[in-house]
View 1 (cartoon, rainbow, N blue to C red):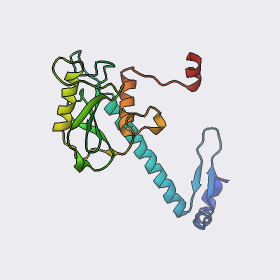
View 2 (view 1 turned 135 degrees about the vertical axis):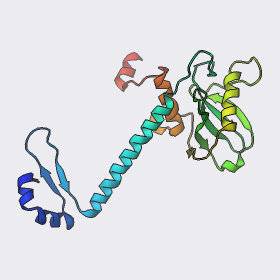
View 3 (view 1 turned 60 degrees about the vertical axis):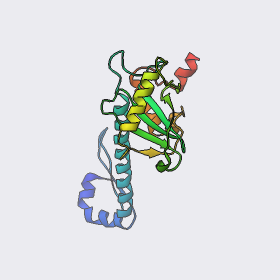
Length: 208
């Protein structure tokens, strides 16, 4: 660990030292001053991959948050009659495939698909459930949830599934660490509309 002034004087030597596999930490005087490290080429490549993965993760989280924050406008929007969520899961048989749709999304897209095996085995709609509270939505005229049921099926049937992410996860998990993309989008939706809130463990125990 050496200072910047000394590093300038010994730069060629330090680069050779780092190239031989021995990293060198450069320091600057004063509080809040960042440090730098001269790394071997292999270690630098690993660090660059790590930074790229961090940036990809940040962009993914931002995209999921933006998708989840698309809320229904007006009281007549087709939503879950129980919790008012506009995110719905359309399940197909042969095997079970869950297509995540948002009836508040004017683009009418499938946002994510949770699948067990091959998409080519899709056969027919088995049921539609709210992606937030998991309440089944009835089909048929004048039945609770039927407008949202029809809207969700129409989106899933008419949307292009090309380029939609596919994942093999459980869409009904509640532990955030175990959630797949579909569940994370729904979580952002529920946070945006105030249906859930994040609390610390101590806050949870204090309220219990």
